[in-house]
Amino acid sequence: MAAEPGPGTEALAFRQLRDLVATQEALIERLRLRKEEEEHSKTKILLAKEAEKLQFALGEIEILSKQLEREKQVFEKALSNIKSKALKESTKKDKLISKCNEIESHIMKQEDLLNDKENEIKELQQFITKQKQTLKTQVSDLKIQKQQESYIAQVLEKKQKKGLK
Image 1 (cartoon, rainbow, N blue to C red):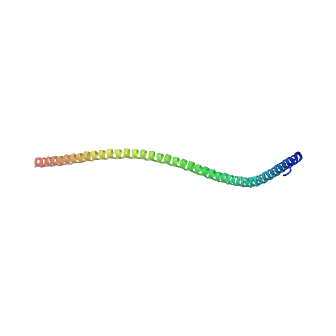
Image 2 (image 1 turned 180 degrees about the vertical axis):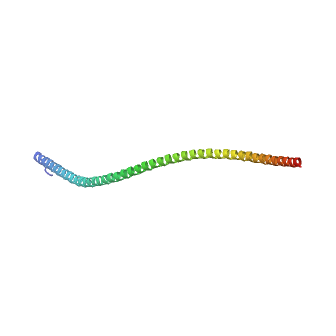
C-alpha cells in the first residue's frame, strides 16, 4: 500500500500549483504586453506611412491649387480681353449702324430733292411744250396775216394801177 499523502504534501502541492498558475499568468501577461507593443509598433509604422502619404497628397494639392489659380488668372485675363474686344466691336457696330442710318436718311432726302427736281423739269417741259404750241400758233397766225396783208397790198396795187390808167 502506498502511503497517503499527508497534509503537508497537499499544501506543498497546492503552493506549487498556485506558483505555477502565477508564473503562467505572468508569462501570459508578458506575452500580451509584447503583442500589444508589436501591434503598437505596427500601428505606429502604418501611421507614419499614412502621414507621409498625407503630406505628399497635401503637397500635390498645394501644387495643383497654385496651378489652378494661375490658370484661373490666365482665363480671367483672356475673358476680360474678350469682353473688352466684344465691347469695342459692339460699339463699332453701333457706330456703323448709326452711320448707315445717317446715310440712308441723307439718301432719302436726296431722293426727295431729286423727285422735286424731276417734277419741276416735267412742269417746265409741259410749259415749254405749251409755249412751243403757242409760238407755232402765233407764227401760223403771223404767216396768215402776212399773206392777207400781201394779198391786200396786191389788190390795192392793182386797183391803183387801174385807177391810174
